[in-house]
Length: 350
Ligand code: ASP
Image: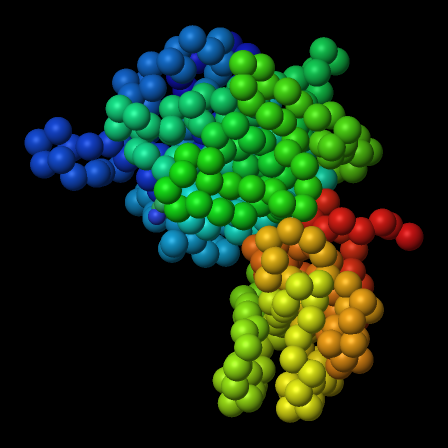
């Protein structure tokens, strides 16, 4: 549905989630609203001189039901419309938004246009909603260009409340507060107040020589295993022997430390010997894994565990699913996990 014919142009994709809900005036229940009626609910959009088109998932999904097949669908929509729009805004439930943002950052290789995810804590049809501001600002960011016509933010981001963040660095940190997302290990790409203050030196600069390439494949034979004092051998063993398991995101303590018990290290070693990739990330919100720092971390290195550096769990697990989905060898996946593909980890390239 085309709302305007003037440039710049933004494609709005509604996947579901709280933002797209309105209160049924008769029953009081929250229902998904039809995006064909977007202008009725967000008349402020008329004040943009933008061409805004919309696409709606049918039916819209709660983001707890998000799946790689929906990520592929999003990539298909973006790829199909890539040349026709200046930017893309994806409205998404907040619960798994950071997973989707991470996945899309890997799937949209050589992306040179903004893909901005946003949502809200209160439905757009509720008086005190945060949805309108999030939506309006996300659209403005998706359409923003430098004087030479190139986009200001040509990467996958999450915009929420007042922060524009690199998508694969974000985590949902609050189930109630309007300020619900953080990028702990990479600074915000823009702060939004009276002005939108972009940080150009932090924003990815696409290589104009490289052609946009969409990817669709994932292998979901992965697990996130979070350690805790008292974790039992039979539990760890049954996870590491799960049929078809190919990779583990191991959430360790502090700077990448884990129990030194023999059974634990032996189980990890046996798993890596069987070709299972184990990536070490920290349970702390900020900071990176340094397995060389303490003996407890060193044992993990010796067991064949690789570092996830300062990766979020969302980014580590989607990166593994993405790499596994492309049929790469164990060695190639370990090599790529050790590198930043799209700014998802802080690591100097050698
Ligand atoms: N459960 C909703 C979802 O993630 C919550 C939200 O939209 O904020 O889809």
